[in-house]
Structure formats: structure tokens, C-alpha cells
Length: 316
Image 1 (cartoon, rainbow, N blue to C red):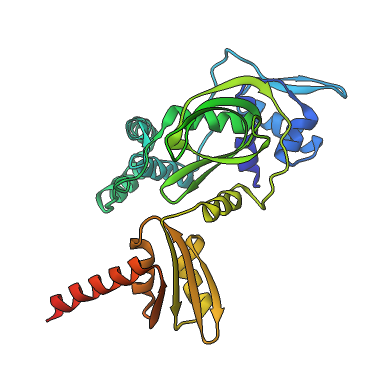
Image 2: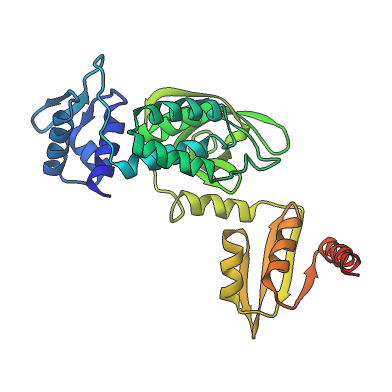
């Protein structure tokens, strides 16, 4: 983590207005107590009022009630923020399009003329799609509530609508948010079920922090992303796809990414995917440019035949 990234992280933690014991804050930032003291001094030099209690039980807290001066941005940083806000305006998070436009107008108004010209060039020469059709929409309040609870290690409760439509009340220790494909997930320890779970954010409602802190548990995976991916692979889907292709396994694996499993098989490979919709494996097969044999499911064999007939008619 660079010094600037660490400073932003420190400021983010202090802006919760909670009191942070020095060792805990240093542990969050993965720095020594000495480095933490220097970073706090840098914030004070920028105009932030950080109260400190010295001693073995000492710590830090950002003084409430004061106006916070903005961090100064390099030219490249300002342009990066503005580009990010333009991208966010097309997100699938409910309400962020309006917020992003408002924030973008404020950022642009503070930019010097040369940077505004850069942004105007980017805007006039770029086409961007909106959210994918059929993408589940996430409540922005739910997203921010859970993000803060993850950051502050705070127990949160919410209502969750399962895949079958059943609504249950959950009390969880949130660990991390994961954005995967068109969906957002929360990885958390479910206190009532005494096990790790991943929750789709578009199925969460009435998220509410409890004010109760917890000590983070060890996740049974390399990271939160890997945990969500494992859960998706175990989840029953409508179609179990198995296709044999005449191409190197590593080449196909690069195309498939995290959405399937590719194993070497002699001079070729075998693709396996669990999907609800056959369009994605069909696109992977078509873009591979390799000879192939669909072993399952029969619905994919029919879809390949249908598409082949359609292309044949178009080329006649």
C-alpha cells in the first residue's frame, strides 16, 4: 500500500468518529506505531484535527463537528475521479446515476480549464452502455450500510429473500463486499446458522447496523472473492455443460475465466460449466475457433443446431 493510499485509508477509518486504540489502528493499516504517528501528523498538517491519547492504552479520534478540508489531488488523480464518476453514472446501483452526475459536476467545477478540456474530450469521444439488461438492481442504502459495517467490524441485521422466495431475518458479522459479473455479494458469518454465507445484495432489505463490534473470524477460503466463486460453483443450476474442444486447455481457460472449469484432455481439453442460461457457453464455444463436441446437456446440442441453421440460411 502506497503512502497516499494509506493516508486515505487512515482518514476513512478516523471519519467513523469512533475512538481507535493505537495498536488496533496500526494493525488495520499494517504499519508500525511509529509510521502511524507520522501519518497522523501528516493529516494534521493538512488541517484535520486528530485528538490523541498517549500511553499504552492510547489511541486516536478525529474531532467531531469541525469542517474537513479536502485532500489536494494531482492532475491525474482528479481526471481519474471524474472518469470513475462518469462510469458510476451507468451502474446498476439504484440512485447512483443521479449522485454521480451531481458529484461529477462539483469535481468539474473545481478543475482548472486544462483538465476540464481533457474531460470534455473524454466525454465527447466515448460511448458507454448502461447497466446490462436484466441486471439485478442493488439498493444504494443497503450497499453503503454494509460497506461501513464491513469497514468497522460491526454486527448488522437485515431481511433476506432466498432464491425460492422465502424471507428470513439475518444477524451477521460482515467481512467483505464482492462485485462479481452483474451482481454484488456480501460475505459474512451468520450468527444464527453459525457458518459462513454469501448473500446477494439485491435480495437484502432493511439493512441496519447494531452498534455491536466483533473480532473478525478466519474465512475458509483464500479471500472473499474465492469464497463467493466456490459457492456459485456448488449452487445447483439448470444446465450442467460439458464440451470437448480441440484446443489447448490454457488458451480456453483464458477465455472462460472464473465462469467455468477447463481441464486438459490429450491434445485438447474439456470445458465444464454450471449455468442457468446457455447463451454464455454457446458464445465461448463459438469464439474458441476450435472443433468441438457437446457432451451435455441435450438443450445445448439443440441450441448449437438452431444457431448453425440460422447462420447457414444467412450465408446462402
